[in-house]
Length: 121
Image (cartoon, rainbow, N blue to C red; front, side):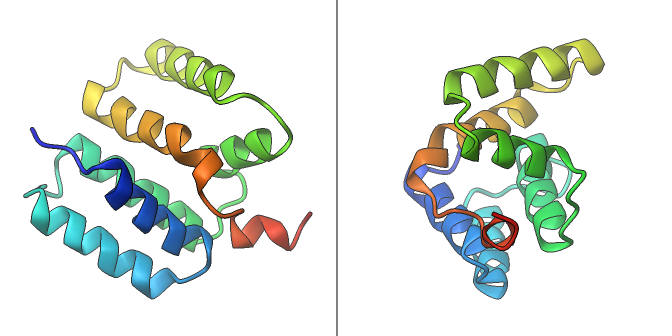
């Protein structure tokens, strides 16, 4: 399976976290088409889930907890480790699902501060 480049993901998350939600949605659709992801592909499901909880402003979601921890100074390495431990202990998820989340964590320092969290800071 071919995965999106860091730049493609950075563009998608940049739109999403800047509050350009329609552009983020279009970028996600381009990713799905370009990389031939089906709705059932675990990597795509993770990307869509991240998009959905951010757009719906689900402050109790793992995404928002992760972003707050990062903005409060927790290292990317610690975030990756805790994420892997959480998921592996929970239900042994598919590796593509884990990879999508780890790709997000790797990009955090190059993304804009999420607009939904700027309001509460």
